[in-house]
Image (cartoon, rainbow, N blue to C red; front, side, top):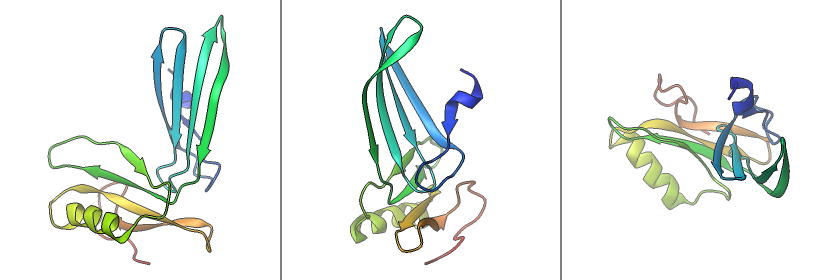
Length: 133
């Protein structure tokens, strides 16, 4: 798959590189697009008959932020908040990043500002706290 087919621009915040995950089984396939900045997510199911796919299902979810957790010595993926995260969820994520030695970041979407803010960590994992809001 060409690299240009592995990302798209986010329709919520405009970030150029929303991630694209794909699955295929027989004549069916699925694509999940997720913005690692704001958490906007789209899901598509496709059926391949010949050389052109037919869209079976498509849904979109507004993002309320995103996070990535990398356990010590491990691998991870990106995750999105599809509702404002509760204090308990934020506490659990912060505990892993601050106290347990995990790497990653947390961003949250601000409706009033119309953009996401990096709350903790770094997408590039080079810095500690970037900004607090």
